[in-house]
Length: 498
Figure 1 (cartoon, helix red, strand yellow):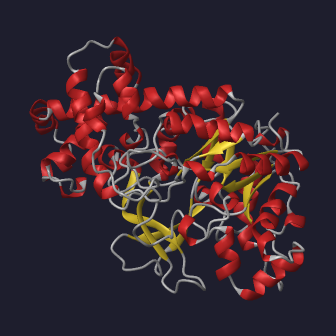
Figure 2: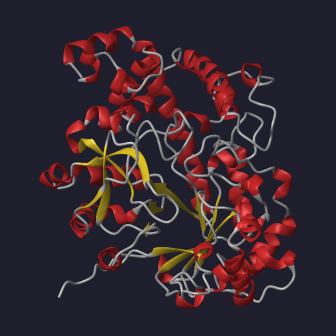
């Protein structure tokens, strides 16, 4: 009989979390960043009695602006660098970044505008940085030698060739011919040094912010997509670790006759096994340096994944292929010790997936928006929940709770009203959140948009569409009244971070 792991879990006590990505913070400079607003939101969470601040992945984003499609698993997003901190360090003057066009809608990020404007400002800071000697910069490069040089070259090559995918690079660059790469290292030296500089400043600011959050007794729940972007440093550099003719996806179902073809390269698990999962251990270890709890997206893909031929139009010809499962997490635990992980195990689930997650001991996720089918006693219903779970009112990919009540299947909405004993429409959203907080699950999670009772205007992402990830909160929304309300709810259900 196999023995379950004795992992350290977040389920020692009842706790709660609020989801708010860094990009969604209010700011004068087009997008939320690691400046004073990030510290103020941490204060808000403290006043609200929360244990956790959950964020989305923080890697550098490309076309589509999705945090789940980053140019690297190891790098940080330069959008999150705060200009005011650079001013305090003497790298910028206020006129370098004030009164520029970052977009004119405080409720939305204008990614097109900040892509241009913020880069211009950061280049000014870089030119000033070159005039000084910073020993900590050299230390940063030494500490991150295993990825920073390749990443800086990769991003500089992309810019040099017109921001195309590495798959469209000239053949000798695409295939990493050593002599050619050395030539470009000389030719693009200034661009390469700039990329190193912005990574240095990102992680310097991020580290100080996390130290402050942790000083309040609050921990960061970070997010890791199982797959990396096809246009990423990792796929360009370590091609042998990926299958070049297969991509990930989901099988056809009642919602999609052709299934979902994601386009992300799947892993060459045989090669990973040969190396003792060295790449995965390194990825998780580096990620855990900057967060406290790791939520892994599409966790079921570690047990088996839907393999889709790369050039098929849809995912209908895919097939399930076994992945290493528990073997991977045995190797991770042996190398890194105990890690707090939340397994995002939503979607198509089999008994093998359930048994795999149970062997790891990681808490899985239950989404209340999936719970209320009156003809089926869903495992997501609050009375079905057990302690080692994380109950979510919704995620970045779902409707807000308010929108769910407005647009979900009317039969399910009516059942939810009866189940949760909701009579007055003004109590619907609060009652839904209360169901999560009052459940026996050791972790309850809601987006800040749900506490704000926002509708469609607060949705973060609608999968398979463009124009997402842009929602931002206004400072005046985060009132003392709201923090008191969250605090009281959290206290009543014994989740309070005292």
